[in-house]
Image (cartoon, rainbow, N blue to C red; front, side, top):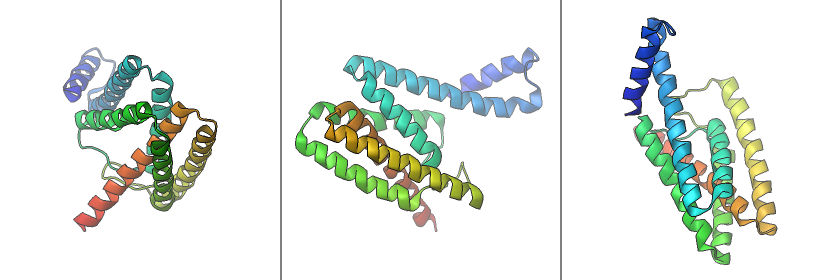
Length: 192
């Protein structure tokens, strides 16, 4: 659906001489990604309003998107599937947040620390959509470690200060990112 809309918009841009025909495929791709992000943010915003988790949702989206940019990991083949997987990645965070149990807090923290180890060791991982040269791998590895360390510091501080929305958002971001890295590694091993 987003791809069809992207094609229609880019065709309009070509018809109005805003974009040259030889650039149309690039615009289709860019528009599809842009529209997918707009729809994702809109859905998250609506869910955050309904569940009254604006701060939690905002922090999760920011940390998760920054981590994914540098750590890599599994990517869906279509923007529609990506949108669904992204929203499904977010929804358990709301349930964890409202469960509000000290034992769950500890488990979430431990899982996030294990996830940090996965990021330290394996990030960045390449996907079939994004290959990296050695220089990029080194740079992305350093960035992913720095971002993860900052995230761990924020997570630990928010745990100690009992700022649940921040704690859950950053913990879940680390865990979700590590899951996508693990899926990519599993698929890579399986295909060899």
